Image 1: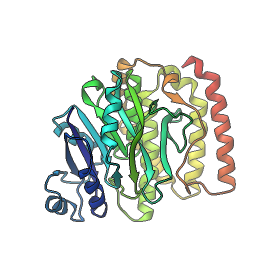
Image 2: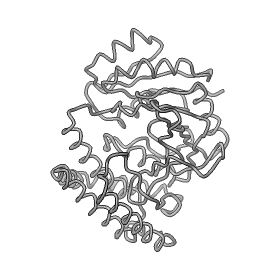
Image 3: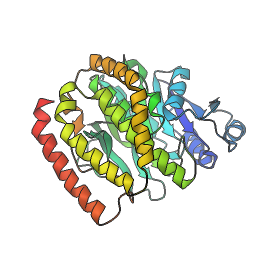
Length: 348
């Protein structure tokens, strides 16, 4: 049995840690250790964990550095090849880790396995099933799957709960710390898949999600919305520029322009255009870094864009779109995006 290091990311999530860490203590896997990486919390999370869960190793960031930085720090600290990533607002089934490990060991090309994410408040409700990456640069969070296979190859791993085999990753770098938060799991998954590795969705690995423990931002509602608009605007473009082939960038431009126009209108209706333009400014400042990363990713590429990207109805979080006009516009946009993707799929 190969040992596993479980990395729990935390930022001011003290109220979630009792349930999360207590459930980890009931994990049926024999050889595992837990590292909690605290991202500069001010709510007493660190002393609480050290007193209540002395078997958990705690790493402290001196300030809020973002989820990718925190996870990478845990990855570097881990002395095992197998490393699990877990959000702080989760509760795990006792067999979750055993089943994730079994999936990775079932296929020499499987470098990552990912769990079923169910609602903690409503355990019968599934939040994430068979995730893939939409060509506009964001994850498709399905809630139902047409497959009944125990192990299913998918396009991405949920950042909420995944297992990584560092030895199989080879040259693929860990999480991109420029992302800070949002779409970092999509970017990582794309790079894993482009390098020719598999991501396995494991139907029997169940994790319950409370959907409230923001890892790296905990502010007033208005500030949170602005920061989310900024990070989403910036990160989606970084993801596309880094990972897509030259032909993919060229032929997918119509769809990318369409979704960008829709995004601008969405933000304008909510008074969030300033963070959108701030994102463009930051992209300009980071252009050399982005292009350097792009060259490395394209050097490692083994698969075509059409093998890692899909087109399907977009899956925004519940309540994000207003009923009526915005929902009707989404259905039209889904149709146009899919039509455009099918026309160029054979050439990318």
